[in-house]
Amino acid sequence: MHRDTYGHDSSGHEPNRHDPLWDGAPLDPFLEDGFDPATALDAEPLPEPLDEEEKLLIREDLVQLDAFLELLAPRGIKGIAIDCDGCHEVHYYAWAIMRANLVHMLQYNQSRVHEPPFSPDPDEFVSWDYARGYADAITDQRP
Image 1 (spheres, helix red, strand yellow):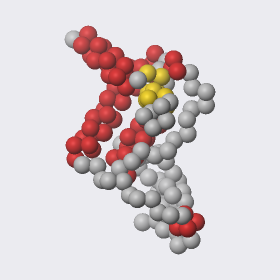
Image 2: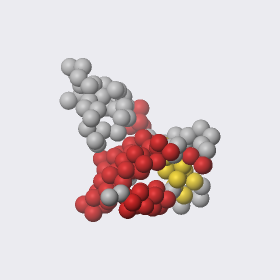
Image 3: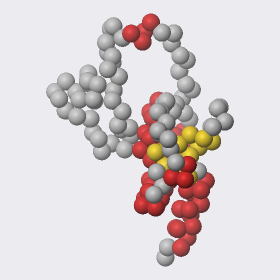
Image 4: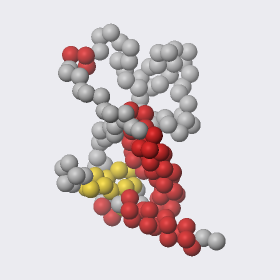
């Protein structure tokens, strides 16, 4: 079925935006186009498929991320900060971007490139370990 840039099929129906695996990204505008300009570029090797254990871990991360969002967003936390081993800088992921990256990994075996937030305030982001510890502490206090 052919879909346009915004995910609508040829009858005009929108994609299922309630599908937990839909990451909200527009579809490739050159999908099924014989004149896709990207065909002139060298093909990158496909990432190795995720095994079932890796997929399970990502699904568990999605569940944890939803819990972190519920607990931390009302307290002004805007997302997750991750130390990048590749560039040795901290990357700041808003909640929605982090979710979209995890969903994209499940679908395509790799994280996608994202635009960093403009002038993020490091005080508004926490590490995954901090978020997990906070969630565990709150959960332990509940009856």
